[in-house]
Length: 339
Image 1 (cartoon, rainbow, N blue to C red):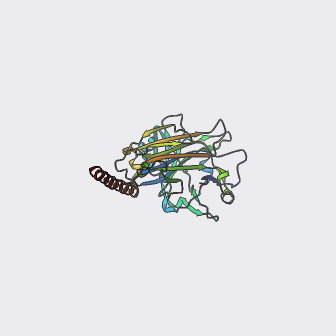
Image 2 (image 1 turned 90 degrees about the horizontal axis):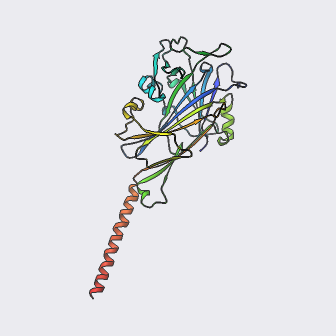
Image 3 (image 1 turned 120 degrees about the vertical axis):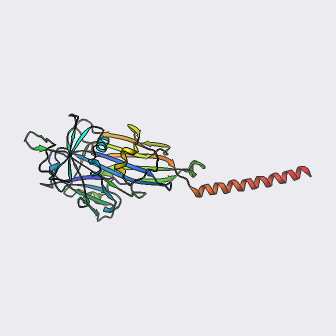
């Protein structure tokens, strides 16, 4: 597949900042949740923490090499306003405060002084804009930062040498109903006659900000008046059913854990796990020294339970046919022996 690209534009000027980049962290959750019918539903969450210059960002842009519409998009910031869920997501203790004059924002202050406070931004339909590219090779999702809190008591912003305030901002959203071929591919297991009736292979090829993988006309269209967002850290989670027999990637995952379905229920809401257990596998990518990590390549392969009723019927038919042939052969041999 082609690469996903994440870019940004500034409020004051569309020109690149000479010698200065926008530092950010990226959180990705790829979900593969079993349905009652035995199939799976797949969706992906993106969370971005923009460091220091949130008040200067006009919009963040996502290029996807596949198509979808705004009905597939869902804000997740509103779900994270619950303290327990946000603390689970960020693996720390945080205090969340409402901002009366900015109802789309929440002050998030860590109890650990080693971490920085940030604004949690709740998105709505008016923040999303999906544009089909003229090349017909995907869509450009625009997420506009429409406002910034004017009076925020909870957050005490840092200042740089020039005395300018620095703020962090976090937003999170989901793309539902991922079609096959968008991010993942399914294949039959061809080298095992019997296992192919009960299992399938799924491959996920996730590429981010890899310019060489972008179509040259797509690159020209998306780079106009925009800059690539630079990431100092990327967290990637694959959350799949415990029925997945094997999960491997181009690099080993850092850790894995059993998902607490009760704690994550407000986050998943109408997504039913049907009392299935889910496991979260975690990969982390960090920048080296002062260099920003601006691209990422994650390959993931799973083998999971998938019953092929057609193949099972064929196998049963072959077994029945072989039993008839064996019975007929035995009868012929018995008659030859008697006579």
